[in-house]
Image 1 (cartoon, helix red, strand yellow):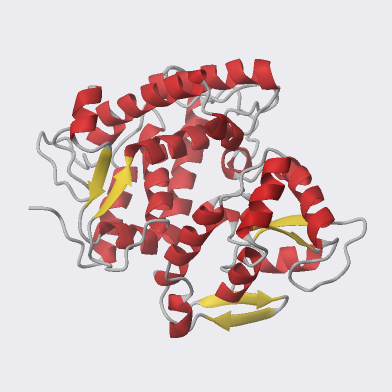
Image 2 (image 1 turned 30 degrees about the horizontal axis):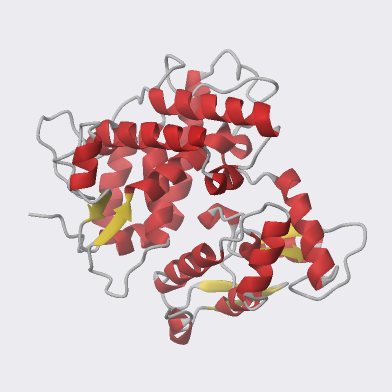
Length: 358
């Protein structure tokens, strides 16, 4: 019988047990867990107890995106993500990045996905088949027992790289009833825990390189602030050099802020980016913004944002911002603190849960 989480704490404990279940030889399980958390936030159903389909192509893309960012050299070195320095997924993404970097210098992963080159499609296929064969099949093994409790999705058909098997199951995995909403509710707590475990694993796998103890958390999971300069220029030209939050004129110091915090959903699309003064950006930090602020950011217009993004070869991700915002607000307890403006914290009201209905 499918697992139905009646208590978020129960599911959370099972996921934490995955972190404590022994030394990992690679970071693949953590990548899948992180991708599932993000997709759950963006897929919250109207019925909180509904089963939810997760498209395997979307899941694969998110895993590739995670590793793509982490493959940036650190002091001229690429960090290992497995104990032996190998692994199909990591090697495939690394080779793809090297190939496309030679052709396009340093392409962003969003541009790579949008272009859908032959090289990307081939890499995507390899990663998806490997995910189904290994980490997705083994993810729910909390113990070493042959039989294990399936508490996220049915993995009985997995463990194969057969494209036919994947197609026969609709190219998807189905989260059990209630799991998607529960994962979205737990995401603010679980995501930092998974990131800490990931950092610890990478440090262990790169002992010689990281002997002096440099901080690698930002390298692995921080936003690439330098790359946001181009987005900041087009936003200033279109909407004026003013802080989106307080309307102060921006002169020498201009920040580009993620309206939905990067730490929560990691969306770099133009629909989620605004100009901000240093004071507002610092004060807002990783706080959940008021739904009104997200609404204002989207009210700049889908067509306008899409056109601006296209002009600079940048993703817009309008729909992803909408779905992520809906998931974040719909799964927060009533009276959750939200950032209204500089030094102004409010609470999320019941009305705000209906911020977006489609």
